[in-house]
Image (tube, rainbow, N blue to C red):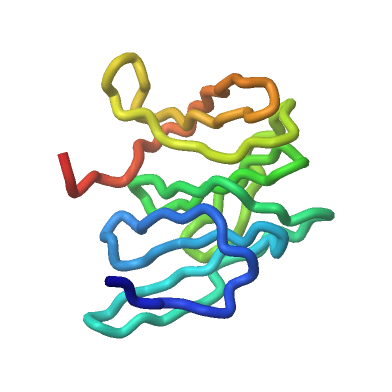
Length: 142
């Protein structure tokens, strides 16, 4: 069974929930935008959360921290962006990588530090560790 909760998005790619799990953030591969799909009971509302104004907006990986900041990777450029609550993007890294398709917070287990972002470099087969000082949102499953 499935339900369509949003349509008309530009190449949706990369998604993560807000800390309260009531909003789903979705990046746009090629559009440079992040949309917020908010749930209120059985109703879903889609809105533009923020935009990266850059030469090429291929947003790829996406995650959310415990404060509700949204992080996205930008294909080709090697940028990592942090969108604050109001949807304002700030470039927090320029990595020496062409294809950074995903990123994730450490869990605190097995040496993966909780307040670090781990960013995958697909071309070189490596992972960057970035200190951000904020852990991932709480997990609602074990």
